[in-house]
Length: 199
Image (cartoon, rainbow, N blue to C red; front, side, top):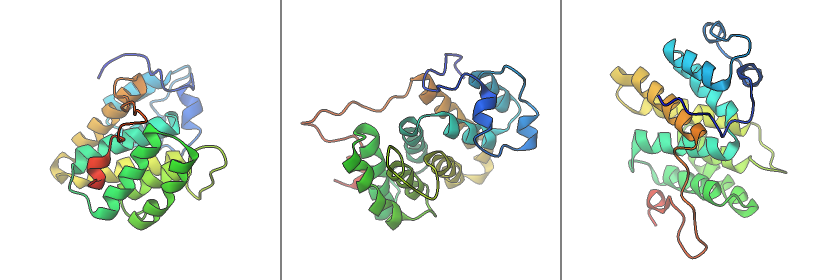
């Protein structure tokens, strides 16, 4: 893993982020007073507490960065092998990430419901649809992102399950460092993600 600053995470203390979700006792045992988010993520990886690492990053990243991270994880896990409802859901999530307008947020609701919360793509579209001012949802964007990434880790070979979890934590850390930004979308260009939707 790189050791750059996690510039996308605003909370200065790891403990502040841990208070946002129910972390496992084994993971919390690694938390020390004064730990930064970077310190704690590194400790979680060293201690093989990857699930907590996923949950921690999902609750540490802003919604836009979190949804983008989830989309990257799902692309890694499934490539283009997605059902039409899942492709539409991921497309809606990416549309909101690249152009976070109220219209794109609202437009993610229908594909989120169509894909359902039984799929990572459905969770990502749900995260996009309930992010931002005035948006309401039964599950927070962070919780939806965490569920999406954890579910995406199960899409590969079970033998390499832990390796995939670690990879996704490292991918999330890269997003937090600003190393994996979403592409800029010009008004006259199609948004990234249309290949997932089959357009």
